[in-house]
Image 1 (cartoon, one colour):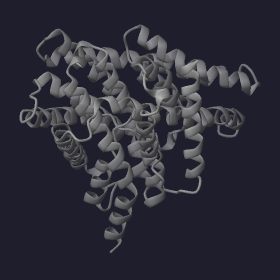
Image 2 (tube, helix red, strand yellow):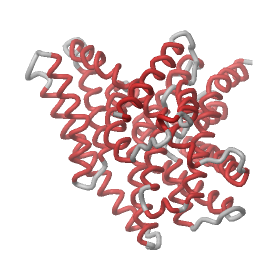
Image 3 (tube, helix red, strand yellow):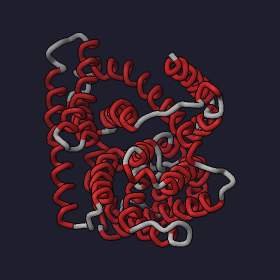
Image 4 (cartoon, one colour):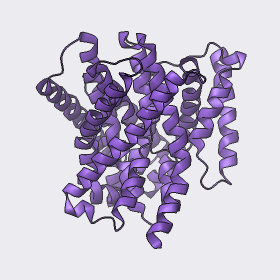
Length: 406
């Protein structure tokens, strides 16, 4: 009964925030929800509140990723597919590597981490969360391609990040030394398996929607695809996240080929998922705020100073990797007329959010979670990213636009 009352209160708070947001064009909703969640944690009704990694990972993540994937423009995916895939694989490996080195170095001045734990924390902090950022970018710049790249990268790198994270976590728990061959072998198996399941389920939904003309049943089928593909992929120890993303992207391509024929189905899906999506998102960010409070001490500079430095290093590592990748391929470099302004904006847009928290709670539930400094620094870094990067996106994009137009 207490959980029911807690959820009702969280939903009530979410409705208020989204109602206010109707009149706020560039309102960073996730930041407000996280801060409100931190405040709610001090209420007696939330004194013993806790949310498990399984709830976030198996209930929230599949739904959120599926709706983002099927609503993502198929045209934008085709146009930027090679860049998005490169950023989500090679780019992610490189960012984890650079950030891991930085974490190992900075924590040596506070509470030293081993190399494996440093890379594990880097893997937790690397996945990006495009919530609110994409809409702000589209409204504040004249280049939709920036928003499309950020959103597409986030969709794919969620799956990549979980694969990297699980491999590193198993190595930390077992005490094994890092083996590049073992890492690549595990990454290939988990990734290819998840993609294969996603292709099968994506094809099924693109064909099965024509079996019935009742849109209610078609929507029910979309729920089955979003969560069924995820569950099956996880059952075979492959990536459920990639399975869900791939099935959603295939549905987006199906819509693009038969826009008029699928218009009724698209509206029915929107009527359902456009209600579910903000509901899941708002409760998720409130969860993040509530869950973070027990692990952070606001007056403890030995926690916030390394967290601030790691946050800065994460932006710098992303800047260096993005710059290297874009400069390495002239075709990608020529996409943007004002290269360094766009590079800085893309780097700042890599906000840490829901997936980072899921991976952090996953870590907390293992023996590695006994390292309270690791958990606390990770939570503090995620909060700094959510607050400063979300709030800074709009003014930064406007400032860079004025500089470029000068």
